[in-house]
Length: 189
Ligand code: ZN
Image (cartoon, rainbow, N blue to C red; front, side, top):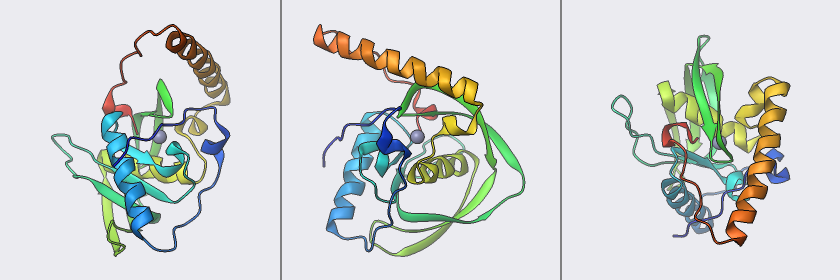
């Protein structure tokens, strides 16, 4: 397994639509395993393949809270087949939008169809943080970030700050300074 570099916005690869995988073969399984390791190292609770520069419809998740414990979940070609009418609001963040958070409303419950790590077709009903997270990750596969769900004013402000932070990080790295600490994993989707 390997830890892969995570792309941050604004990056054109995060805005692209990812392609379905034909089968879950050894290459896709390797990608899933590397993504899980990358997500744990970040740390975060969800990661989509385009965040590591791979435009394939693959996501990984692992939520470990008192109310929701999923263990590692691998999903290829995830698809929402049913969504509830009622929404929940969660303060989302993203490993590709570091240190910025915003309330996003999404359906409170969704049913997802996907291929698992072995390539078997599965369906799962997701609620609570898992529902939010799975929808956030599927958005990534369509080139949509959580900041695309908020006002353009706030989005542009965040993108400007990210560019500034990236320049500062590059300067700090050139000067050999230690990186800043990671964000709260419950908001790193
Ligand atoms: Zn994200």
